[in-house]
Image (cartoon, rainbow, N blue to C red; front, side, top):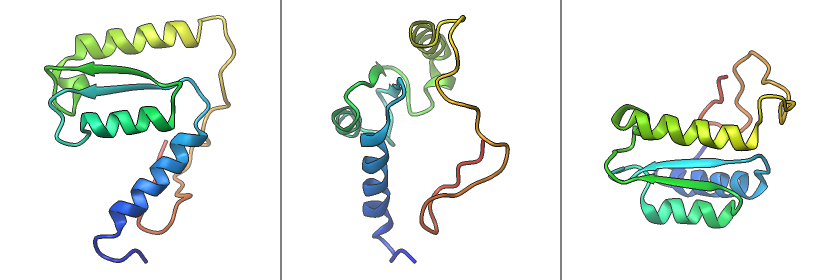
Length: 112
């Protein structure tokens, strides 16, 4: 069980560990007005996962797709068009259709 207040440091360690092992093409889209992901947080992620492409949408808050769907969609479509051409095989097999939680208790569950 994670002590009250220490869950943030646990989540940061887990995020860092995952980011350093990430090998798939990665796109980070940040809303410039986000109160969730700071520019420093984005830069930290980019240092841990240097092959990540980054888009900072200056006039969007954290929910970029809702605030500036045009820029979000164009960024994602452009990224996918370059890293996963239509005639290419998938980079990895699809997720199993079942909820799973591979982290410590209290972490966010990955539900595909």
